[in-house]
Length: 143
Image (tube, rainbow, N blue to C red; front, side, top):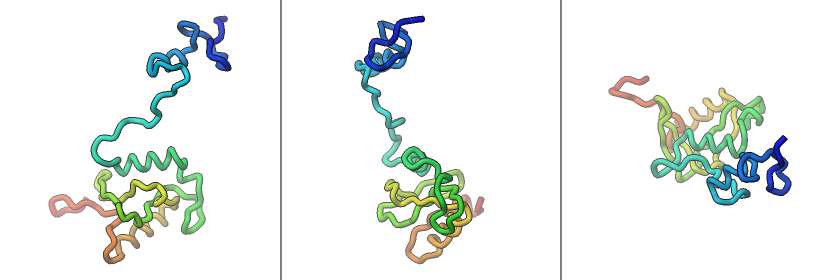
């Protein structure tokens, strides 16, 4: 059996230069065996994160929406739903859908699929409100 890592409290087997594999990689990447480095993921491409990136952030910060009850009916939630109340909302595309979304994660609530669809329909039906979800129209034919 190899000797233990020289970092106090580690206990893993030595890999290189008295350090375990994890601490050795940290030294290689950051110069410090205790520095985990940046844990923010890939850098942004463009001015704002996409709709999908925001939903990834929601999952990382709050976990799956399935772990919550639907805010409307109390059943098991399945999706994170944007409330349509952010004055700085953004519009993005996901597949053939045009979607309103927010960078502020406090504007998202867990909903079951049916309540989410009903909520988005009510948002789209209110005058003066941007649509939460719209089917993109390409060359006059809706997909």
